[in-house]
Image (cartoon, rainbow, N blue to C red):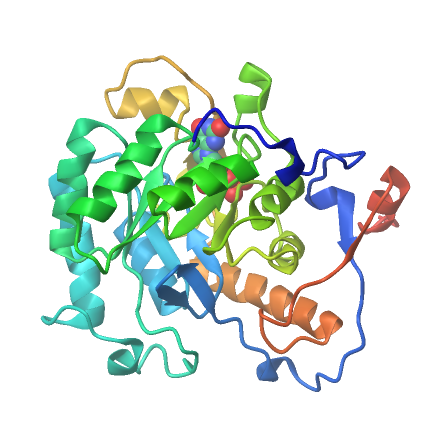
Length: 369
Ligand code: XMP
């Protein structure tokens, strides 16, 4: 475990290591008459399902209670961030749980048919998801979150192939209720996937240094382009894989899903919406909201952390209005992608791709304007 390196498991033989802009999906014969015949049901983790394959990132300018609730209504899930007290995070989880399941715990999707009336997969449970870290008090946090109704916990750590993460997965599996799924990350290699699965992880979060505000690759030199990271992990993973970071469009979502990811985690695409935490900022040239890296100086200072190990930027993004419009637009694009593949669901959506040159990349964008 840990120090074993089997380079054959990763994409070492590839000439290039690829990210989303380096590839395009290859169109397939299609009989799809209408995109309404396409469903995007998938898994967030081994035992919890989604109607749409999207997860709001546990960043303090992306996912608090409002975002988590709206994402559920939209068939995705929001991972409630951990930059708050255990009590505050647990209260959010209790509120979310109550809005879905009412007083009783553990109801299946069918009991909650109003929002999920188009649910017809064999995946039973609505995920209620929150982030934890790997410190001693995160064990207390994990227990409190589960007592409050969380059923999927994400170990939210920049370098997931770490002894502390492996031990935290093992602790969670040994000490929390057996119906709680644990997602671990972030990782970029096959060895990390094998070690975390062996520890008991029910899902894997993939992507190191590829997020829109990440400075990890610049600061440390470490990271693997997103497509290759996904391939490394998908080569060996037996649990659902989440593509996290660097997703800028429905086309990028489609590429991640076509490679075999079960879902995608979004930060910048959801930041700036009404449901993202934070005030609207008025500037002479328009309205904005703040979006900041979880490891940015601003986030650390806001939460009273030491100004060390800064590996992220902070910025403002244009105010976008309600997140529903954004999610619907993204899912529209993904359904369109499935129709180009002749696929009616995500299981059928496994595709070949071609690598593109810079000329191909330019051609792929509107280039008259
Ligand atoms: P996008 O591209 O969707 O990326 O905005 C969101 C993901 O970026 C990661 N993240 C960070 N990575 N330093 C990093 O190196 C940071 O400060 C930071 N904050 C977020 C995280 O995986 C998130 O889901």
